[in-house]
Image 1 (tube, rainbow, N blue to C red):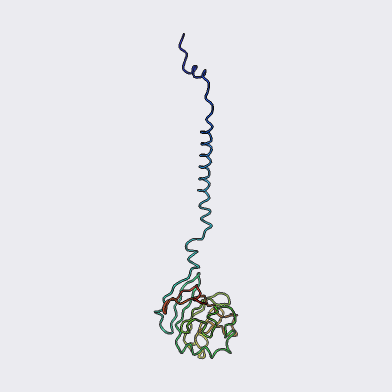
Image 2: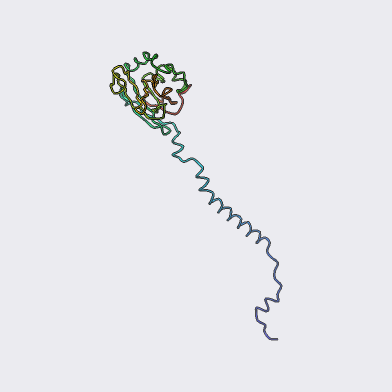
Length: 210
């Protein structure tokens, strides 16, 4: 008997049945690879929907050291992208506040532009320190501090001290209360804030017990 080629001998032999378990494994593995690829594509999109650390920080409370603010001086800090002014008011500055009621639109701060714990003549937790958002309530300009009384560049010799918006002439006293006869309709806004100590403020969070 002549030797047959190996290829012919293999063709004559019956083929084994298909391995269903192996096929099932390959199908699952292929699906898993596709799923991983889909997650990889979707991950950048999902992460783009989540707020960035900078965005979260923009709304977070801001801690401020006020211990170095000299009497009669002001500092400005940023909170939520807005300037917040902190003024260390002298006794002479505070003494002007009760004398201005007839000149002001809302002398008793009846409009809800400050926390309840700041609805007083000083518009503050402690009389000494004014904490107010430095944005004019007319068109959103930033007023200029004219803290000294009698400042001729503000309202003349009778000026009691406060803030002047150079854009349209709106004026506010040393508690951020708006004077009558100017474009700004309401007082400057007082943000929520709390004292962490005698020299540290936390802007953006209510005082304890408030």
